Structure formats: C-alpha cells, structure tokens
Length: 432
View 1 (cartoon, rainbow, N blue to C red):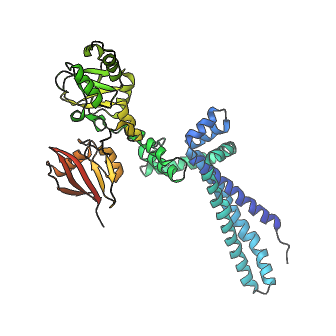
View 2 (view 1 turned 90 degrees about the horizontal axis):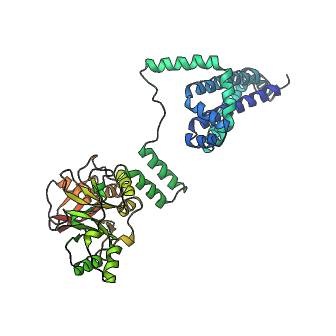
View 3 (view 1 turned 60 degrees about the vertical axis):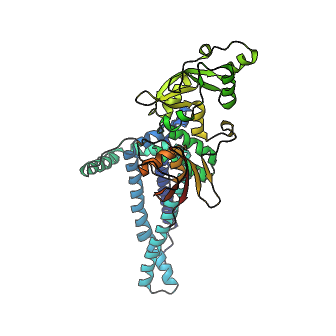
C-alpha cells in the first residue's frame, strides 16, 4: 500500500480556502455601500479608494475573480479525483472491499467530499461573512485583488472584451451607476425598522420627508373654508374675539372676504397693543405674505417658507383664487404627524379606529395619508387632495349620507355630510 499523500490533501485544503477568499472578496466589493467606502476614503484610506474603483469597474474585477475560481476548481478536481482517489481506494480495499469497487468508491468519495467542503468553506460561509461585513472586508481585500487584477490583466482583457461583445450582440447596454430609488429607500427604512436599527417613529419621519417632494401643497394646506382671518376694518372687540377663537400665532387680514387677503399679522403684537390700550391700526401690523400655486410640491413650499419672514404662504389656484394657507406647522405635521398642541379641544382626529376594526375617517384627511394608512394605489397626478375628494373622484357625484362604494378591498360609507361637504367616512375592510 502506497503512503497517503498528505501533502496533496493539504494543497487541496488550501485551494478550497483560497476559493473562499475569492468568493468573499467578490461579494464584499460588489455589495459594499459606496457611501461608506467614500467616507473611509475621505478619511485617508487608500484601500477604500481602490475598493471603490474596483466596484466601479466590475467587468475587469469580476473577470479576475472568475479566472481564479475557475483555475482553482480545475486543479482541485484533478487533485481530489486522480491523486487522492486511488490511495483512498487502496485503504477501502484493505478493509475488505472488492479492489475494483474500492477504487471507484474512493474516487466518488473524494469528489463528494471535495464538493461538500468547496460549497461550505469555499462559497457559503465566505459569502455570508461578506454580506455581514461588506465594507470592512472590501477594504481589506481591495489591494490584493487589485494586484491580482494587474497580474492577470491580459487574460482579464480577453474575458472582459469577449463578455462585452456578447452582451452587445444580445442588445444589452451598460446602464451606468445604479442610484437608489424612493421605493428602495422606503424598503431600506422598513428593513431597518424590522431589525431594530431605527424605531417605528423614526421610520415614519424619514418616510414623511421622502414624500414631501411628491405631495402638492394643496394636500397640506388649511382650506379657505376653515381659515381663521381678521377683517381690516374690525373693531377692537372683534379683534379680541378673533384672538380668543383662534389657536394660531399668525392671522391673515383681509378686506371684506378671505379672497382679499392683504397680509398677515402676529397675534402677540396685536395682543400687546390691546392690553396696553393703544390705538390699533391693523394696516401698520401687516406683513407681506408669499403666494404659492396649489400644484407646488411641499418641498419647494418649504424653501419658500424658509425665505419668508412670516412662515405662512397663501395658496392660489390657476385662476388666482385663494384656496387656503400653508404654514411651517403644516409641513412639520406632514413629516412627523399631527401635534396635540395644534388642535382645539373640540377637534376630532383625522382617523379613529373603532372597536370593530373599522375606521372613522375625516373628509379633510389628506389623500396621501389615507393612501399610506390603507395601502391604496391612488392615481398619479390626481386632482383631489383629501379623503373627501377621493370619495367624489370614485363616486363621480355629490353623495348623500349612507351612500357607499368599494375600492381596492375597502368599503367606504359616507356617514356625515356638512352641507355639500363630505365630513366623515366609515371605512372597513371587505371580507374575503
């Protein structure tokens, strides 16, 4: 019986480990987040800069890795089958197996064991490590992989050129760098919440910020019909009553009707004059207000309010009519949710969950909030901004109390009308 080739077995083990290093390096560099690599590069890490370059040139890098993995696979197969199969067969024959059967069994056994350890040690475990520590491993392995890529440059060029020609023949073009979409960011937020990296409230705030760009300001404004305002010719008694009735720190001042807003005043300035008994001239207290179109997105409205001196803007439609007002508080509520301090004692919440699981929804609830709460898919570029507008969009007519409709697995019933305005909707999930 020939001596067992332990040196070949050690060589096979080394090949499997090297294969694992290649697999780990490949996945780590490809899946590493560019932003984190850039942060490390900005701090002076040369390896991070190399990792970024390799990730931005995946064709050459992947070809290098594939050359290494393929060569290792060929050599490992030859060593395990031809070199180690025979001595294993001899030892099986010594145990009493038929010599011919022992040789075949030894060959199959070595191939099976090599395949098993190649999958576990050479692929699965390294790739799991790469996924869990992508940036750290990418930075460590970037320089060795870069050196290997330069050594194998002629073969890499041949493989890279061949693969590009084949892709072009198939009509596939390089799309350039991949940029995260809003949907992917929302998925990242949801996954981070699920794993406990961020809290649910933090996720809601991040999602609210993401949605600002897609929400027209008319979805967030206080409509003209609910506007608190002060007449320019109001008496001091009417001024006191307006201050007592309104919870706001700013009040629009109009000439006869809300359609003729002249400006806005700070309630504390007016109150100070009333307390001291000085003569009040409302025109002297007026501040200029910005005017924004109702289709302006909320993010642009935020920039306008940041530059204004009042934190309030008038929202006008395309015909120049006043639709309502928007304030910084409205935008903050759109991001973080409603604040109890912004509501009067008699105000009802926009949505209330009842004991039977149904939802009592205010007609003034924003369509965007309703869409998120119920998981609806509302049309892009929609003309309605509230839950009431959504009901009118579906029904195509002014409903009466008790009228209902079903849409996207939800039943909506009009339970309260305030004149010609839908005030309350009862929403329940359709069974089955």
